Image (tube, rainbow, N blue to C red; front, side):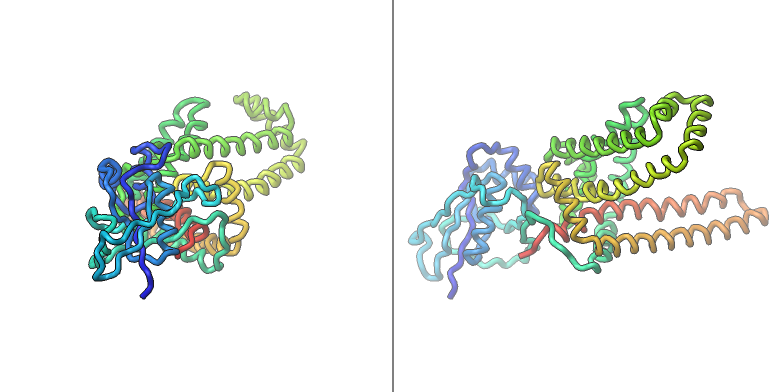
Length: 405
């Protein structure tokens, strides 16, 4: 009979970790509620978190739990018929400070049981639990091209579980950014930077939904609590890309064109038209250069928010890994793009057909309100599609940067 092991929380925290931070780490990385995580940390009592494991799996859980700040032990399970007290715990070396262990997070399944004597023989787990074991990878992996379609279907399934909450979060974030845009000059800049923690909150909500939680609307603001500074840095780097593009455009159209763009008024419009006509070829070359540069920028940005929010990467590392992930999986992204292209075409056909029918009825003297039906239908189709598109960021991220065991 193979020897089995259990992973035990000793009741203590690792040096340098605060209880509230450990509770937050556990909430983010496991399928436990925040209240249960806080109680686990506050009670300071030994508890078995995983049991009936082989040594390799036990060591993996040991490392993953230690990354949250819990001081853990791996204990050999007592054979049947042997006194539990006769088996001494076999603590493993604390690996929290071991540089060979990746700092990335893992979704950690925790057994839904009450506290146990860490030296007692393991009991049979009679309650089925959702296993979601694996590791966030240090580098992105290559997935088959067909997974581009899977990203869309997985995101659609996630959306359909709780559509109203996803729509509410999307509309709240849109309202927040729109209000910021009313501020002159600084508003759009703040919207770009503060939008990243909101996007991070959506990714954390998607992570929770993926491991079986019922999401809450306030998850939208979790990005302002969890890894907030790095998410803000993501936004600042993104702003830097825009300024870079602005410099290129300025070089292409010349200093007088920039002044004209900034001046406003009819004189400025005439100056811009004259400048474009005189330098039409140079102007279009500048536009093509910007479009070409926007593709790698989009690749570098695509996975940044889930990499920072869910797997705790730094902003700069997230940009690098995002670019690598897109480069490795360009075929899957091609299938993904074609899938959305077909969906957009279908929506346009449906809206156009409804618009034609409404025009026919209005021509016959029917209600004028029918004229608004195509617009209402377009909103009903486009808004969920945009939310699903946002959720595909998480489903593609998990597919490329997560390895199940």
